Amino acid sequence: MSRIAATFEALRKEKRSALIPFVTAGDPSPAQMPAIMDALVAGGADVIELGVPFSDPMADGPAIQRSSERALKHGVGLKDILGMVATFRKRNDKTPIVLMGYANPIEHMGYAAFVSEAKKAGVDGVLVVDSPPDESAEYLKALEGSGIDPIFLLAPTSTPKRVESVAKIASGYIYYVSLKGVSGASHIDTTDVEAAIARIRKQTKIPVGVGFGIRDAATATRVAGFADAVVVGSRLVDEIANAPADAIAPRLQALVREFRAALDNLARAA
Image 1 (cartoon, helix red, strand yellow):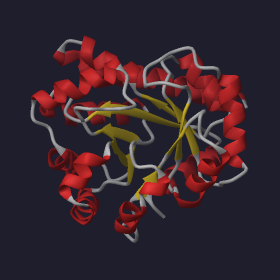
Image 2 (cartoon, one colour; image 1 turned 90 degrees about the vertical axis):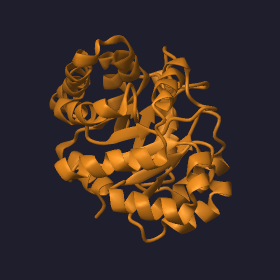
Image 3 (spheres, one colour; image 1 turned 90 degrees about the horizontal axis):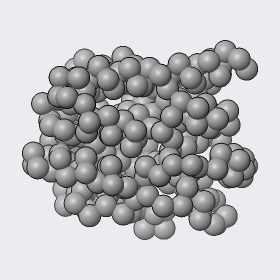
């Protein structure tokens, strides 16, 4: 069983939702990533999503765009990020790591080389934002037998046919985008999101996580009431941007712990 599957299985038995923090790899600097990743785990992260910085994002709002710019100023590339994961794996063999980014850096490295190096580093899942199911055959072929889960996005605009396509090929978890637009927006309609998750569940048994627009514990709690995972990104990235360098890790740990406590309180009340 993969690390992602084992994590969700354990959480299912405990009737808890997964907390998945997103940070951009190399933000604000590569030197701070070990402390940042350890802080996320210490705060209660079940899975870590590492964003691969990219100069021309399509789905990222201003906060995550700026985090990519900070990382790119340090020259952070895909090989550097795989090195960060490999270093993390020397300290932590339990917490799944998912890389989230765009196709260009992977295609530049080459699918086969990327999958080989990602597996060697200890990557557990890959979410390529601009690689929809009907354009992912080569990418999926490269991932076969690697143990790395291909994770796909669904959104409020996804057609029933797209939901069916993703349900057939995704593994690990499905990432549902809670709103129309880019990451970091607020005021998601959790009633609409809950209805969408119910429709997705009719076509798949794999976990469904919700992200884009979850910026506080109250919203996370509402989403955890019907989703298998809650993804928090822009709120954490803002904290990285605004905290003094020596306070970033402790502030992230405290913030993740706040989200974790909210989800666990919901589980205890169920």
